[in-house]
Image (tube, rainbow, N blue to C red; front, side, top):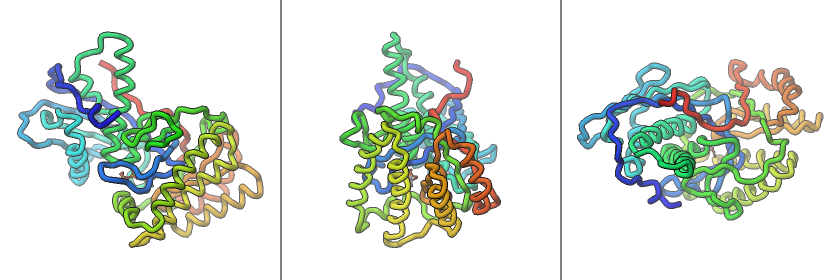
Length: 371
Ligand code: DP6
């Protein structure tokens, strides 16, 4: 598919007003996206676990207005008007207008809330942008005449998700991996048929039972605002001395994961996932300007995880986002023992003792009543 496939034919339904509510999850990358080309095209393919509990719920209300050549929108977070969120959404609308030509015909009221605290250091851009993209897709669906056959309907359902992911990517790259579950690939990889730089696709190959219902406990080491915005971070890869090697490594790690996910090789899985997390941070430490986003407690937790794994043989590992929080990943069958370990040995390193229990999830869903 090309970008042209996302430009709609003229709409043939008239819709005066309406509202849709979608909830979309966050995701955690196993192979990281870090570095992009113009137009939100990733420098390397990435793969993530879709999460279950960490999500954004967005209601989009829309009402026809005079098309005066301008976007019109209001944004609310947890019921509170947030004018400072408007520029980001305005930019998003500008980027997607060619694919959603109705945007200037309506006034939009966007009401959004997160299941995780806003000040948790957990990025809400992936879940937020994917929830909004899905709401906009629902509007577009109303503007298009109904399908005439079951085949058309199922093609439309598939297209609906692909286009939602395509749009979400233009809001925030990693958001395109938050439409579906439970493992999603974004970025063209020669060994993954159907993979694309334009949208996320469900991981198409066999996944061993070891990875079913995988757990992700997020340890909130630093609940502050991000020190480095991801846009700034991605830009640091432009002149980065190790960039090309890094992009090659990500491709290789994703290739290796195909066999690991099939055979259930947890030792090899841990090597890829922890290696990816540390490489992401190594890229930040070796860019110009350079950053250290880990905190002393991030390292304390990593060392505790390594010692516990060495001592017990339990395949628990960590991954990191572009921040200090630690995602502790472990198989479902180790839930009881690892939760004990987290409570007894890791919670003391969390800010105010806060952490979030999450696990692999199955993607976004519409949560209002179907008309
Ligand atoms: C470290 O998707 O937040 O989480 O496209 O600029 O919005 P933008 O970046 P964003 O970057 C996420 C980077 C990461 C790794 C990942 O999720 O793959």
